Structures are given as structure tokens and as C-alpha cells.
Image (cartoon, rainbow, N blue to C red; front, side, top):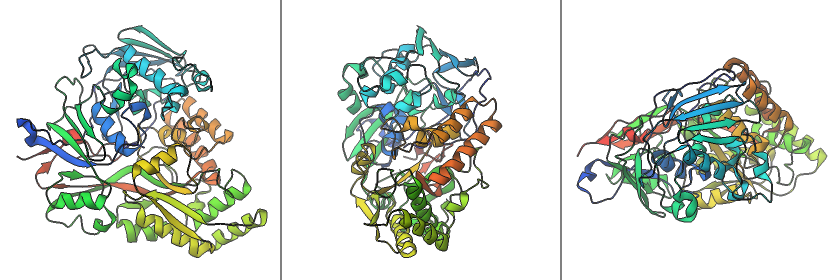
Length: 546
């Protein structure tokens, strides 16, 4: 799960030619070079996977990959699209055919050139199910994708819709219209990889060779990830600092204590214990701005009593209506979160407070009890209801509050289930081994409603191929997403996205809770703090006084 932000969708039939590029970088380092005075130490968590962009779907690895790699396009603070390595991306045939022209002169940090093969080889590797990359579903609309999902697929099989015309030209044929293709082309899944990545994937995942604003230095597991400014970077996200040192913490409280003690320069993880005081702490600089992140919890369909059927839907709706989101937001988040009214964040064009069925997101204990009783008439409840979370994050207080509401409203045994680290938690989520509900959420990878809906709830993103970790599958929802991607305008696409959301409000594969603000704090020596379209920090903009 990454941190990016969303605005509008590109119209399907239009020819798209994009120029320029945006921002976004982070970092800190403990190197001994003379230039280290402007190396920024920042909060980090242990990545759940080796640092392959196509297998990075969570914040710990996402923040690192964002700084190391440069893709075809980047996004500005409003979600606008700007070319990075791409010189142009042009669509035709109702957004089923794209021609991509690359800029010349880009190279990886090992000195090898960034070419059309660098992109196409990386996309083929990620899309091929034999390689078990978590972002495979990002390529689901490219011709040949379904063949790469077969159980016996050759690991070297490729997408039939991709053709390398020459070193600087890629021809892309899709199996269906996809107006969001140029937008998602800046996400982690679409980053280029050098030849060395395929020769020794295990080594590359621990010591990546990249083409972005920073150059990888070291990864001391559970301690730090260091990177320095890449002198050969040719894009528009040029770092204003000399490097980044992601100091890895298992507790936001520990990071905040280090920040106040001068042992950390910047954190965008404010612990619950500091939400009432961080903005008035005179020893720090505090930041609190609207963001694009959503907080949810997922109830996977494989749990007893929670299948994708009438009983399961009734129970999900009852649980959702047991929760007083407004009170929890006031007492726990202290003005840094807003109760959810749909599955999107407010900056997205498809966001709406008027969706049919959104009453399931409102606190209504009497209705919750009624729905729970109807579910019991189908199959009597037994057991306990648990919500798992990673104890090294900031979920403890709100998960416990939710469990108390569920317990008191429905008169069942509901409890929080802490898991010690993000790594352990995400490994269980990604492998489908969760035996309870679990905290979830989303920080967008690219500026389109497609990223919140298709990548999290479409059938193509289930079964380990994307962010649909609860394996939700509804053909009616999938059909609405296809219509949105085929729409000739943003306005029409948004109508289909909203109709798809109304289906989600009936099924509740995940239960929306709050939209989170972008919050952060730094020492007084740090300047340049800014946030991207999704509310994530723009690490390349950070600098500090000696």
C-alpha cells in the first residue's frame, strides 16, 4: 500500500501527449561523506518484501521505491500528470492502443541505459503470475494478461500486447479500453528495471539498481535504509538534500521521541499519544493538511459467517453500523481524520456524499442489532470477532475502540488482535492466511478513482495479483469498472465509479472508516516540508540547516 493522491481520470478516446514531470522523494543517511550535513533522517518501517517495484504495495517499501525509481510519468500536488522518462504517450482506437516515446539519455545507477526494453521487460516480469508480484493486476487490461495468469505459465512468457519498436518506442495494445492507462503508468508497477534485476532477482531485491532521484546505498534490515542523491538523475524531482536515511522503527512513539530528542529529522507517523499536542509543541514544526489516504478494515470472505452471501452481507452491514465514527474521530484522531461516506478520498472527482446505500456507514445501533438478528436467523452466530493490526503502527487505539462498539452493540465477543510488526502482519495479509478481520486502508499509487476501486475490489486484483486481499469478487462490480474505463469523459466515468461504489456499500468487502489528513512533524532545522497529491511527504523537497 503506497502513498499517492487522486484527482480526475483521462478521457478514453482522446490522444494524450504529456510533458514535464512532478515531485516526490525522501530520505536520510548515516554515511561518513563530507556532504552528509544535508542528509535527512526520516521515519521508516521495515519493507514487507525485497525492493522490487512491482512487488511493493505497502508504505514501508513504497516510500523507498518512490525515491529510487523514475517511471514514465509523475504527479504533481494536485494530481496532474507530467512526463518523466516518457516524451509522449499517445492513445488511439478508443484507448485500446498506446504508443509511448521515451526520452534519450536516461541511465540506471550501474551506468546501463534506460530503454524501451527496461520498461517492457519489467512489465512482463510483474504481470507473469509465476513471478508472484503483488502488482500483477495493474497490467490486467494489456492484451495477453489472462494467459500469464494460468497455473502452468512459463516464467519467461510475455504480454502479447507489448512490442518494443526501437530503443525509445513502446507499442501497447490493450484487450479492452483503459483510459486510466497513462495515469497508472507512473505507479510502482510500471517502473523500469535494468538487466541485472532479472539475472539475479534475489540480489537485486536487497540492493536495487535504479534511475530515480536517489541512489541506493544500504539496507540494514530492521535498522535503516540509506540512499544518496543520484547525480545522473534527469527528471523534475531533483533532490534539494544530499540523501535520505530511512530509520526503521517498530513504534511511532519511539520515532516521535527521537524527533523530540534531535535524533530524527522528520516523521509522517504521528503517534496517537501525540495527536493532541504535536501542533502546539514549540520544539517542533508541525503539519496537518487534507490528504488522500483512507482507513478501513477488511472482513475476508473465507471467514465463517462472512461469506459473499446474504448472511455475510447482513453481518458486515451490522458491524459497520455499530461503529460511531464521529466520536472516535474526535476522541482518538483529534481533528486529523474525517468519517468516511464512501470508498474514496475527498480530493477524487468521483467522491460523493450522496451515494445510495451509504447509510451503512452511519452509526445506528438499533438497525445494527436488527440486521445481526436477521443474519442469526440464517445461521446462528458462534465464536468471537477479531480485528488484527500491526502493533508497530498507529492502529491500536482505534481498533480497540471499534471492537468495544461492536461488542457493546451486538453483544458478541469482539477483540483486537495485535501482531508485533508490519512485516509479520503484511505477510499474513498477502498470503491470505488471516483468520480474522484486519485493519486496512489505502494511499493511492496514481491519480485516478481506478486506483482505489479497481486495484482494491475488482476480481482481477484478487488471488494475490493485486490489492484485493480479501478476495472479493462480484461480476456486477467488475462490469461497472469496465464501463468507467471505457467512458469518453471524466464525468461519465465518475458516474460508473459511483454505481460501482453503491454495489460495494451493499457487500462491504472492506468497511470504510475515516479519511486521514496528511500529518507530519520535523525538527526546527528542517524546511521544505510539502505533501504530494495523496498526502505523502515530498522527500526530495526536504533540506536542513547545518
